[in-house]
Amino acid sequence: MKGGYTLEILAVVAVVSFCVLFLVTGPAPGEAEFSGTDTVGSAKVSELSGIPLEEFHPLVPQWEPPSGEVESGLFALQAAAGGIVVGWVFGYWKGQKRADN
Image (cartoon, rainbow, N blue to C red):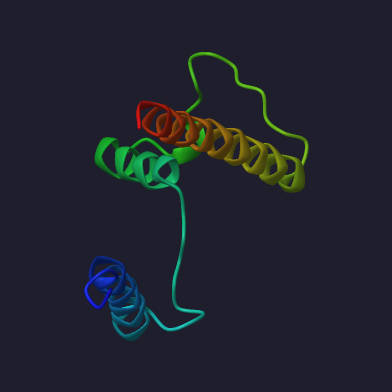
């Protein structure tokens, strides 16, 4: 029983260590600038090509959500659907393992 939780304790220590390391070495609140990879990539392409960022347009017109709240809701819905699929897969595997025993 003494060594039964060794791996779990090591995992918790590792997660807490990464959190502390991120908080200590990360930027101070208010100094961080977060942007998506699309924005960073577009800015880099604009910088390298000399074409202003406003002149870039997608080849295929894309639908844009009417507001940021709708966009966030769709993202949350996508995350929930992904979580359900992952949970179903792990549950299926656990059920198979239990049925084999």
